[in-house]
Length: 261
Ligand SMILES: Nc1ncnc2c1ncn2[C@@H]1O[C@H](COP(=O)(O)OP(=O)(O)OP(=O)(O)O)[C@@H](O)[C@H]1O
Ligand SMILES: [Mg+2]
Image (cartoon, rainbow, N blue to C red; front, side):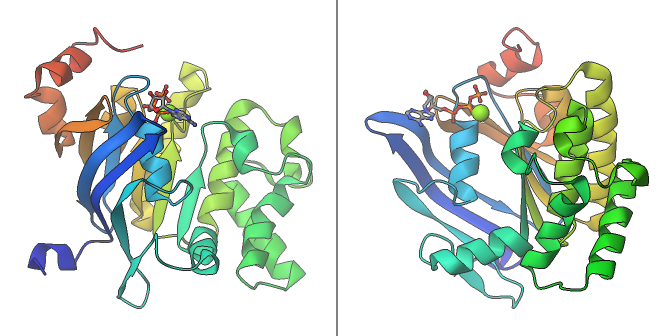
């Protein structure tokens, strides 16, 4: 094995996904390292969500492999492990933050239960401990303690997104997937949320893959950027390099904002 790969957290090789004959993503390969934040950028329809869903096993690719370094240090082949093993990873080692908080929360149970539920899924049974940890995490995402018994449907969009983040991080994941985490929010709320996410990712040393069509989000959060076009990765590199000195004409267009929506 290439010694460089030994430290990887995730090894993605040749991942392609077709929807019938229409390509979603094509022959994507990259490694992600522990604590690294990777942004996947590109215009609408370029394949960002398809790729993220394949890597996180929410979608089965047409071809390719993804290996993940488990807590025991061994690599597990994500598409070959059992459904139960994958579910366990999703509940413990991984988080998935959806663009729409309603997809990642239970809207009709309390905020505290939304966070507590993840703890129970990993074996916590002590009500007092669960409530205490939930309170701590709500505080960490700037939701005041007196909202713990409210349902997320009584929260603003920004609060819901912060609650979704707390629910995902409470089990101490090593890798978090985010699809347009600030997508539906207005600009001032986005800025605060990004600050919060950046702080948490730094403090916890999380690795993350963040899909966004907003280069400002990529600039603020990521160490590395992958640019997608028509399902292909056409350019990748360190965030500052890609944004300050883009090599591909398409990336140059993106950066000069002609293609940004
Ligand atoms: N469930 C599906 N069935 C058929 N085609 C799909 C499906 N999901 C995505 N596609 C197609 O795959 C391609 C990539 O779509 P994808 O949703 O991955 O793009 P994206 O970069 O996430 O776009 P956006 O920024 O709009 O979210 C597009 O051509 C899209 O039409
Ligand atoms: Mg998408």
